[in-house]
Amino acid sequence: MSSSYCTVDIVGLVYIVGGLNEMNEELQSVDVYNPVTEHWTQANDMHTKRAYVGIAVVNGFIYAVGGWNEKDGALPTVERYSVSEVNYHCVSKYY
Image (cartoon, rainbow, N blue to C red; front, side, top):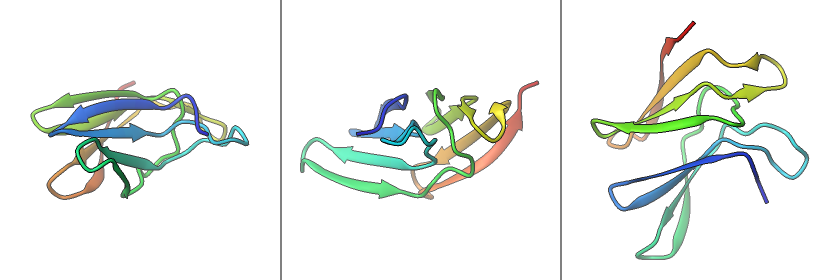
Protein backbone atom coordinates (compact mmCIF):
# COMPACT_ATOMS: atom_id res chain seq x y z
CA MET A 1 0.00 0.00 0.00
CA SER A 2 1.37 3.40 -0.91
CA SER A 3 1.31 6.52 1.24
CA SER A 4 2.15 10.25 1.08
CA TYR A 5 0.34 10.66 -2.23
CA CYS A 6 -2.16 13.27 -3.30
CA THR A 7 -5.59 12.78 -4.86
CA VAL A 8 -7.84 14.89 -7.06
CA ASP A 9 -11.16 14.40 -8.85
CA ILE A 10 -11.53 15.60 -12.42
CA VAL A 11 -14.23 14.67 -14.95
CA GLY A 12 -15.61 12.05 -12.56
CA LEU A 13 -12.32 10.17 -12.18
CA VAL A 14 -10.09 10.07 -9.10
CA TYR A 15 -6.36 10.54 -9.75
CA ILE A 16 -3.82 9.32 -7.19
CA VAL A 17 -0.48 11.00 -7.83
CA GLY A 18 3.00 10.16 -6.55
CA GLY A 19 3.66 9.06 -2.97
CA LEU A 20 5.75 6.36 -1.38
CA ASN A 21 5.57 2.60 -1.95
CA GLU A 22 5.84 -0.12 0.71
CA MET A 23 9.66 0.24 0.74
CA ASN A 24 9.43 4.05 1.23
CA GLU A 25 10.60 4.69 -2.33
CA GLU A 26 9.12 7.72 -4.10
CA LEU A 27 6.69 7.11 -6.94
CA GLN A 28 6.16 8.89 -10.23
CA SER A 29 3.06 6.86 -11.00
CA VAL A 30 -0.45 8.14 -11.55
CA ASP A 31 -3.33 5.77 -10.84
CA VAL A 32 -6.88 6.52 -11.96
CA TYR A 33 -10.03 5.17 -10.32
CA ASN A 34 -13.41 5.20 -12.04
CA PRO A 35 -16.08 5.04 -9.32
CA VAL A 36 -18.82 4.22 -11.86
CA THR A 37 -17.10 1.09 -13.20
CA GLU A 38 -15.07 0.47 -10.01
CA HIS A 39 -11.96 -0.10 -12.15
CA TRP A 40 -8.38 1.12 -11.72
CA THR A 41 -6.11 2.09 -14.60
CA GLN A 42 -2.64 3.57 -14.72
CA ALA A 43 -2.02 6.87 -16.48
CA ASN A 44 1.37 7.89 -17.86
CA ASP A 45 4.00 8.50 -15.19
CA MET A 46 5.15 11.96 -14.16
CA HIS A 47 8.68 12.89 -15.24
CA THR A 48 9.84 13.16 -11.62
CA LYS A 49 9.34 10.88 -8.62
CA ARG A 50 7.37 12.86 -6.00
CA ALA A 51 6.22 12.16 -2.47
CA TYR A 52 4.30 14.80 -0.48
CA VAL A 53 3.30 16.45 -3.76
CA GLY A 54 0.68 19.19 -3.99
CA ILE A 55 -2.05 18.83 -6.60
CA ALA A 56 -4.46 21.34 -8.13
CA VAL A 57 -6.91 21.34 -11.02
CA VAL A 58 -6.96 24.50 -13.14
CA ASN A 59 -8.74 24.88 -16.49
CA GLY A 60 -9.01 21.12 -16.94
CA PHE A 61 -5.34 20.39 -16.23
CA ILE A 62 -3.90 18.63 -13.18
CA TYR A 63 -0.84 20.39 -11.76
CA ALA A 64 1.69 18.46 -9.62
CA VAL A 65 3.56 21.06 -7.57
CA GLY A 66 6.72 20.49 -5.56
CA GLY A 67 7.04 17.48 -3.35
CA TRP A 68 10.16 15.66 -2.27
CA ASN A 69 12.37 12.77 -3.32
CA GLU A 70 15.54 11.18 -1.97
CA LYS A 71 17.65 12.12 -5.00
CA ASP A 72 16.76 15.83 -5.24
CA GLY A 73 15.29 16.72 -1.84
CA ALA A 74 12.62 19.44 -1.99
CA LEU A 75 11.40 19.79 -5.58
CA PRO A 76 10.99 23.28 -7.08
CA THR A 77 9.24 22.01 -10.21
CA VAL A 78 5.71 21.87 -11.60
CA GLU A 79 4.30 19.29 -14.00
CA ARG A 80 0.99 19.66 -15.83
CA TYR A 81 -1.14 16.64 -16.76
CA SER A 82 -3.42 16.94 -19.76
CA VAL A 83 -6.43 14.67 -19.36
CA SER A 84 -7.15 14.91 -23.09
CA GLU A 85 -3.55 14.11 -24.10
CA VAL A 86 -3.04 11.66 -21.21
CA ASN A 87 0.45 13.02 -20.63
CA TYR A 88 2.54 15.12 -18.23
CA HIS A 89 4.57 18.16 -19.30
CA CYS A 90 7.17 20.01 -17.24
CA VAL A 91 6.00 23.61 -17.03
CA SER A 92 8.01 25.56 -14.49
CA LYS A 93 10.39 25.91 -11.60
CA TYR A 94 8.97 28.06 -8.84
CA TYR A 95 12.12 29.22 -7.07
